[in-house]
Amino acid sequence: MALREQSYLILLALADGPLHGYGVIKAVRDLSEERVRLGAGTLYGALDRLSGDGLVSVVKEEVVAGRHRRYYDRPRPRPHRPGRGDLPPDTPGRHRPAPFVPAAGVGNAMTGHEHLAAESHSDAYADRCRLLLRVAYPPRFMHARGEEFLGTLLDLADPGRSRPDLRTVLDVLRAGAAWRLRERPPLWHWLCYRLFGKRLPLRYRWWVRDDVRGRFFLLRLLGSWTFLVFLPCTLVDGLGLIGEPGSWGLKLGALLGACVTAITSRRQIRRDLLAKHRFNSDGTPIAP
Image (cartoon, rainbow, N blue to C red; front, side, top):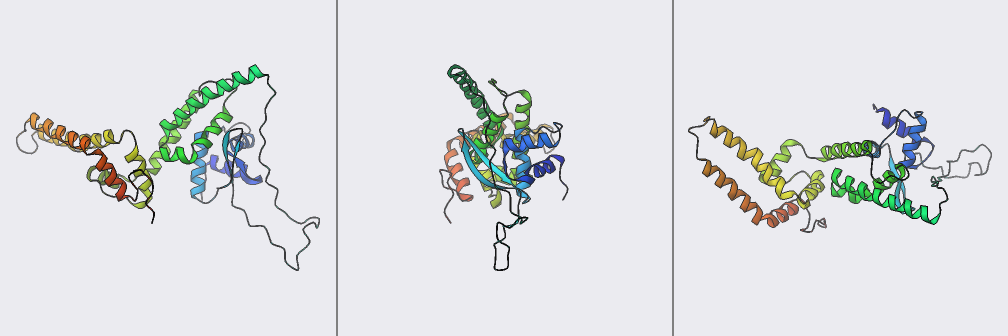
């Protein structure tokens, strides 16, 4: 299996034991002698790919200083259970796995005034990072990994910063766009779903949930009909490719009628799409 350099360095960083997101970034930086500096978005995109290939898994979760952390590790052989003919556990030279010791946070002593100022900067930085993540990633990603991602961004931040730098913003937006494209259904399935309300394969049901419950669902629905149906038909008719050009009033009336129908029946459309993909109207999965 061919690995990208970043994925290879991540696996190499995990060779000595589990690490959380910020620990992986620091280890990769040290292994590459500062040549490879992973952003948080790049890191979690790589971890998702490695996890999908069975090369990395989550082994522990904890909250440290109010920040959610997940520890990742490579698959390792199970420890051997001693039998009758085995050496005693304390025999010198016997192989035993290294103990799991999470990396401890490092901090400097601060006065009360400095602590309040740093906390104020941290709060402002955290709020802007949350907004950035909500723009870049869909709700289900934020529900599952948002706090972990935010903690890594805060760990990476320089002291005193009140907003993410341009490099961090671009890294998160790029990784979020890549994640959305990777999770999006194929074009043909998407067209059938968007234009005719067809049910997507089961693996995309959570994508449907995010789409239907999103705040811009109605705009996406009407935009799809406008650009995929109304505009092409108008262009064909306007160029006279099929018979004589029709009335613009008739075209605009049909578009307005479709908009009014979608707006008045939007709740029913949402319920129908959620039910087709095994969700209740509030977005909770239907029990099997």
